[in-house]
Length: 507
Image 1: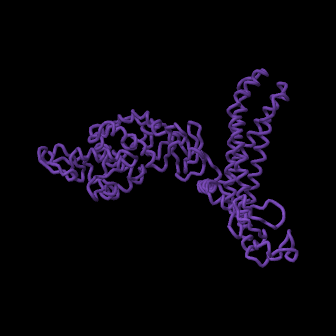
Image 2: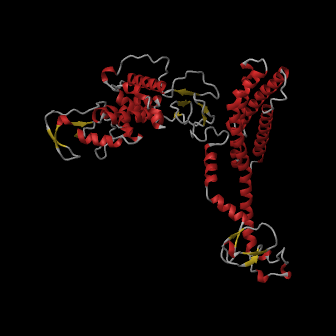
Image 3: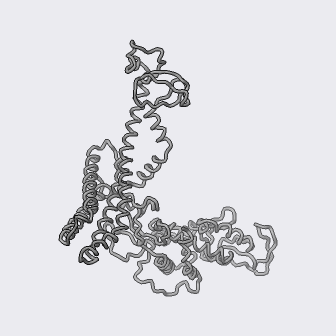
């Protein structure tokens, strides 16, 4: 994925951080100068995000660097980039703090001065490199603005060692306790061309990873990024590749999990994988042999239990209710189907705890089964979406209709797919909903039931067999029914998402 995402970034290698072209005029369109980025469309309640290609991201990055350099009179692109990365590409915050105390901002960002290299007083001066302890000539050494000078070979080894992870863009001077940031021009001068290309890929990647308002589309093979107006956006975003996902967690496997929160999803996934859930089932559905502690499940019959040796047990016979030896039981204790010792035994206290665990487990299974049911239905809807074109072709050959007349099939399957996904995650939301808030719980279940009812109705309408649609008039009538119910269902979905996740049940 990493290779495919950055393999096309050869164009980015052309961006040079040279003082000579630092103020060169370029055409940046109507860009507003912020990597909280240009608004190419009017922002609405839901569509407050923008999809950016690599080229758009690169262009807008160059534009913001240019604007900040001009406004704050920063002489080099390398230094300006370090400052912007330090402020997570928040241009306004950088400008405000820089104008208040520029020295403090530079020191905090790791820039002693805008001098990208501290030149030696004499190029022929002999020096001892404090890393390798070898004698060298000053022209074969390098120092950042902090003045810590080392031989080029040691610098190269140090920097190339850093270019193994994305953190290389935050490399500091190797001098102990020095916080001077190693800028891009130093990397370009000191490392090999191959290493520098790797560094540039990490540098480009940092344009997104260092900015909380931008994230890469997590779809495999997609190189687009998404810019949002706010980092805690609840609504899903949709990439140009059609992948829909939650902006906050940006998980390629989960995608959009509305109306469940990221925390709900994380807890739900962990619960499904947690071994403790198996332990809870064992506690709720089995009891341990009082002698060897082997778990035993009762599937019917009387209270006389035997820990069978052929199943790995010890042969001990005991009462299922009070767990006492069966030799102490008989007609006087209630016979084979009751036990009057149970009320006074410690086994009753244990069973009360087990009953609570069993109730919790049954609640979980209720929501889990419905979660899985809609997940399976979503796979069917996805299959229907892929086959919508073939189904449309069947109607084209059966009746004299236009291809436009079968477009509703794709729209209906898209709506079914969206509804099934929301219903799937609604059961995760419902599981973690505070059961003490009865009014919220009742409203949620009412909205959920309404959405389920209309989704199932649309599914029934869409899946109508071809045979009964034996005339053009029947086809048009069926088309109108599916089209109208698709719109109705979309409206119910919108109300459900707004009412449950966006506005809130108590809004």
